[in-house]
Length: 186
Image (cartoon, rainbow, N blue to C red; front, side, top):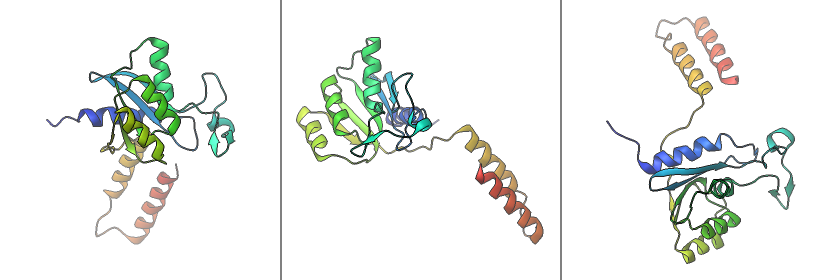
C-alpha cells in the first residue's frame, strides 16, 4: 500500500482548513506541525463572532482586506491561546505568506515554511526568511481536495456517460447533454 507523504498529508490538511475561510478574495489554510504532529490550524477569516466578508463583503483599505485575520496568524494565535509551543515547529500553508505573516512566523520560532502556491511573494519576506534561517520550500498539492457535493456530481456524470455508446440516438444524446449541463450548474 502506498501511503501519502508527510508533506502531502500536512499540505492537504491546510487545504482542508482553507475550506473554512470566510474571505471572498482568497481562501487560505495553515497547519502548524511539531514532531510530525499537528499542533494547530488556522484559516483566514474575521475575528470570532465578527462580521464575515462572505456575508457583507470585504472591508478593503489600500487594496487589503482589514477585516480578515490571516490563516498563519490564526494558527499561531491558536498555539498561544492553548499553550502549544511553536519553537522548532514547521508550518504548512496553502499560499506563500505575506510580509506581516512572515515576520510573525519568524518571531514565533517556526523553523520551516512549506507552501503550495505562489502568491505575491514579497522579496523582503523571502530575504527575512533567509536571514532568520527559516527553511522555505514549495510543496505543490499532489491531491485534489473535493467536497462531497463534487464527488456526488462526478458520480452522477459518470453514470450518465456510461449510458452512451455508438448506438445512442441523437435525441438521447441531446437529453443526456442537457442533464449533464444541469448537474454542472449546481
